[in-house]
Length: 188
Image (cartoon, rainbow, N blue to C red; front, side, top):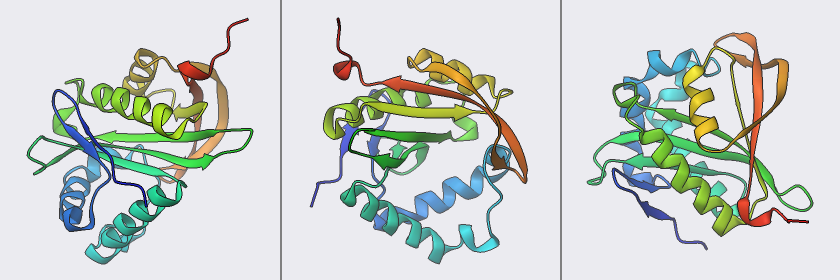
């Protein structure tokens, strides 16, 4: 069984959430419900319940160990608060060696560089430890913060997918981007 990672950055500690810390996720999701709801699918009412949150944390740990997905949280250094989260989902190995990236940041912490800091460390971890070739991240065209963040991280635009995901109750277009693992690029 793989050890859960613990990445230290200037402002945070990044790790897979442990079951004993599930209440921090409950707090994060409740405090940021309004802020995040315009960027997420509509959730069932029990999605945020204590039981469902515990279940999601257990699944996150299981998925990390199986290699199916990696959900990381960025804590403040004393691990009393979640600042931001990211998930590398739909991990596919074989000839594809790729995944999708999703992320969120606490409404009170926007604009402070924390999401960049977390994703920079998390992408490095993913590319180094999991040896994936490609990470895909998509954003709605009006989400200028995500566009700027992904550009700064080195993601390249690949196109526009019409009516791509059902977000906040309606089908939304998304800009498709990706980042290639720098160590897997072969020079000719």
